Each structure stands twice: as structure tokens, then as C-alpha cells.
Amino acid sequence: MPIEANVPSDLQLIVPNLHRRYSGVTATNRMVAPKLAKLMRAAWLGSSAPEGIARIGLADLLGLWRRRTPLIWHARRNNEMIAGVLLRALGWPLKLVFTSAAQRHHSWITRWLIRRMDAIIATSELSASYLKRAATVIPHGVDTEIYAPVSDRAAAFAASGLPGRYAIGCFGRVRAQKGSDLFVDAMCRLLPRYPDYTAVVVGAITMEQQGFANDLKTRIAAAGLASRIVMTGELPIEEVQRWYPRLTIYAFTSRNEGFGLTLIEAMSAGAALVAARAGAAELLVEDGVTGVLTPPGDADALVCALEPLMRDPEAAAAMGARARQRVLERFSLDAEAGRIAAVYRALV
Image 1 (tube, rainbow, N blue to C red):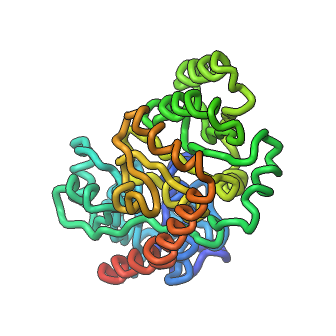
Image 2 (image 1 turned 30 degrees about the vertical axis):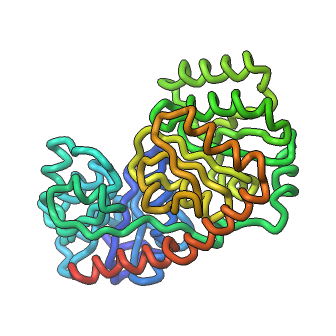
């Protein structure tokens, strides 16, 4: 079967996204894929395709069977690795690449799949240490034009219609692993002392986490803060992107994390950062300079780190400016794409 007209006839790279629910993995894939498409002939397979990259469907994929020129298949999940291994066994000319952000021991099936990859990328040295084979360490990058500060942060927040002058945010699915409860507890303690602040929790509440979320709402109501601790639920990605520049402070409260993309997004938007030592926090954040690091799961430490920044918004703004500069220098999306493309070229 022929490839559709909008898919390059000399295709070099397939970016699969075989997961219906929008997730952090999807977000990282969506950001870097258009940059990769500028460096080589690439197409996206699956849901949530971003602008700037051609799309390929299942019928087009069938048309690539027995093709002679090798294709890169870059998986980021187990099911994408499984699909790549099966397709190659059935005659598709695939070179298999896997990116791992996990900071834990892998299951037997993941280890089995990893051994069948042609190249492995890890998002941090810690992630690489769990892979049991050689990996190229390439940290995630961020689009510094999309995630950028605004000239008037106060006006941007005022446009939200929420009370106060300053916003403090915590983004990600509402659940214990993300530390949503730690953030709510810290806000219940701090907001009564800082009436100019409103706290915003942006993230999906899944059916299995509904009880957890309801408990948080009960705590918020009992503290009399229902108008100042706002849980937005899941928002379109464009609305999430609009929220970052409204924040004076961003709290990264995960108890454990693969990478923690919201960290780098908040830094790029110029928010002061208080981050648990989870995921890539220690790679991204210079403690006391571009953010403040705290022990994971420690609500008291979170309060102690947040309060000085809430007390001094100018100091928070200066920290946010330093965080933005660090992202520009070391964690741009263009740099990430260039290093990934170099891995591809070594294979084909």
C-alpha cells in the first residue's frame, strides 16, 4: 500500500504513541517529535499527534513491509517496544530505540524488551543505572518559546479571575505518587498567613483516584480555603501552557517520578521552584539558586521551603529568572533533538 501524500516517501523515523490517555510521556514525545522532523524525515503513528510532523496510519505502516531501507522505531513505553519487536520479526526493517525515564528496577518483561533494542536512551544517569546495559544519557528539553515568561505576571494571573495577586501551582495527575496531598496540606498551613496567594492544582482526577481527591477537597473546605485552593481537573494542553506564566512559585511534590517534565516547564516559564528530590530534580535544580530542593514526602520541609518565597515575591521572581536562564543554557528542546538524532544516525 502506498504511503499517504503527507508522509515522506523516504521516511527515516516512526514516532509511535500507542497510548490513548494523555500523559507525561505523551507530552515529552509531542514536544520533541516536531524538532526531530526538522532533522530527518519522520512521521507520527498513533493518537495526540502534534503539529509539525507528518502522520502515518496503520494502512501506511503495512505498506512499509519488506522495505529495504531501515527505519528508526523510537519507543517510549512497553507496548511500543513490543510492537517494534513484533513488526521487525514479521519483516519490517526497523531499528529499535527506547527511551527510559524510570528510576526503579524494571519488570522482567521490560528487561527482556530492553535487551532487544538497538539503542537505549536514558533521561538521567540514575535512570541509566537501572537499565543493565549501555545507554546514552539525554535529558528532556523544553520548548522555551512556548514555555516562556510574560512581561506582566500579575496581569496574567488576574486574567484567570481567581482571587489574590500571586499564584502558586502544582501540576500533574491528582494522586499520592504526585504528592497532591502534601501540596494541599502545605497550602492549608500557609495560605491563611499569606492572603495575596491562591493555590492551583492542575491535573486529571481519574476514577480510581476520586476518593483521594474527595478527601483533599474535604480538607480544603474544612480549612475554609475553597476559593483559594483551586483544583481545575484535566485541562487542554494549551490551557496548561497558559497557566505556567501565571505562577510566581511552582511546587514539585512527587514522592517518586520518572523525569518530572513539569519541573522544566515551570523553570522555563520563570517560576520560582520548590522541588522534592525525585525524578530529575537534582539534575535540573541548583539548590538555593534556581530552586529549593526538599526531601520527598516531607510536608514540613515543603512548608519551610515555600514560606520564604511567599514572603518575598521579588526574591521568588529573581529565582525564577535564574531558572529560566538555566533552561536556556542547558535544557532546550533543540539540544535534546540534536542529541537524539545523533543516536539515530549511529544506527542507520
